[in-house]
Amino acid sequence: MENNGLNHEMSTKRLQLEKEWEDIMGAEEIYWQQRGGEKWILEGDSISNFFHLVANGRRRKKKILSLEHEGETLNDPTQVPSVIYAYYKNLFGIQPPRTVRLAEGV
Image (cartoon, rainbow, N blue to C red):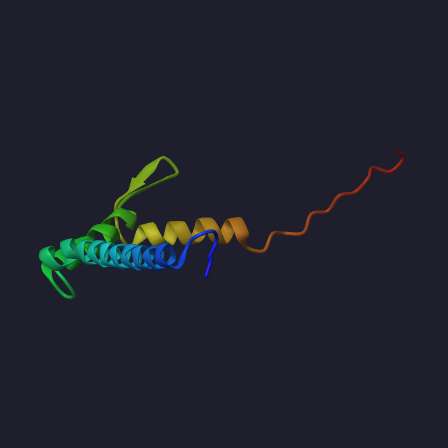
């Protein structure tokens, strides 16, 4: 039986090599998946010191500690949110209606 110009023996050998190749690729994929999780497992997992350091580091990077408002630097944690809220309320809040009138006689 001919298969793509290959005799039966060569076709069987090709299938065997393809199967070995798939097995090698599968083993390599498993190796890299396990290796990727290795750092997390070694340095910490779940509720641990490493986890808390990572989470707190993210929180510190995103927190606004001070804000400059009207030429003054605000460091009080209670004032910063109120200034931000007032800014955006003024920016996106209800604007007074604009009245455009043409001058008489134009």
